[in-house]
Image (cartoon, rainbow, N blue to C red):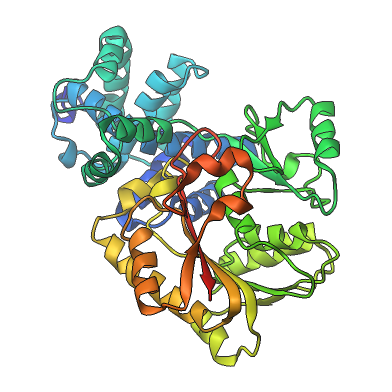
Length: 463
């Protein structure tokens, strides 16, 4: 089927309101054009379209879902559409992706609604009626061929496996982890991740928090590895709608990140700790909760203005009146004026993020293999600066959410070659027993599983 064969109709198109389907398609168009992270793109489009919270959640589900199933959707479009994909108008291409994702991967949306609402999104964009008819015809034809197309996805032709990851990345994982593990990681990343919380035990017990969840009919279970982790397997609402949010009883935080903070231990009274890449503040808040009453001196720095604002908000929500010293600056800027010698420094370094492509599926399509060495230069710079700020017998925990050795083992190896006064310390002693299986060659390096992201951490102790 080709858009050039469809009859033109007369009359001005009726313009429906901009809904979740329009927002999802528009986000995918902007992502293709800019390669920016999808979250700020989604926030901007949702605000422009004035989406209600439930519509925003649906737009996010659709956009993220398309990114997790891109290879499968390309296979479907290629079978249904004779027009070359690269010549399709971007909004039309992404509309087909959004429509087919609903039809083949979401069982709670009726087929008629999926088709009609996707076509209405094209009307909202004022695309010609012939293109609206083209998308309508493709989607309805996919319904007629449903069983055969479902088999095509399940057993694609030779050379067309639906791994839904770029080939440069799957080749690397196959080389490093083997064929079976590469396929397992891809399959895991293509599922919608579970929501994982860390209970702020400085303000509420885990038992009391879970009781509140049960009282409101919210299903929960204990995390598999981190002691304060709680998993909500079915929750799809807004995070501020959870009980205890305003009281600072929890923070959204993956189990790998929760475990990494523990590697700064043992925590002793009156010691000084620096979160050198604080981000939204999850690790800083964890440090504040780990050792109540010890009088720890906590510092947190974050150069990005948006993340720094969220850092301040999260710290204030979880620990009103906290004494953590916060600065919006780079680690290099902080080091120039710093007079503190730290017992522990946590560097959750900027990285390619290949370990969290399930949670952030845009990453897999926005990265190139050449990015890895560029990140490595920045990572080595950060750990070099940290080495000048840590005291004797102090510890640097170097971490990334990457699976790539250039950003992980290679960074540590090169650092230790330059700094013989540091040595690699076994992280097993600081982890719960259940997490011990993630330690390989003195590195904490889980790969994506149901409640834990792909991650890497090394515990470096100064002699």
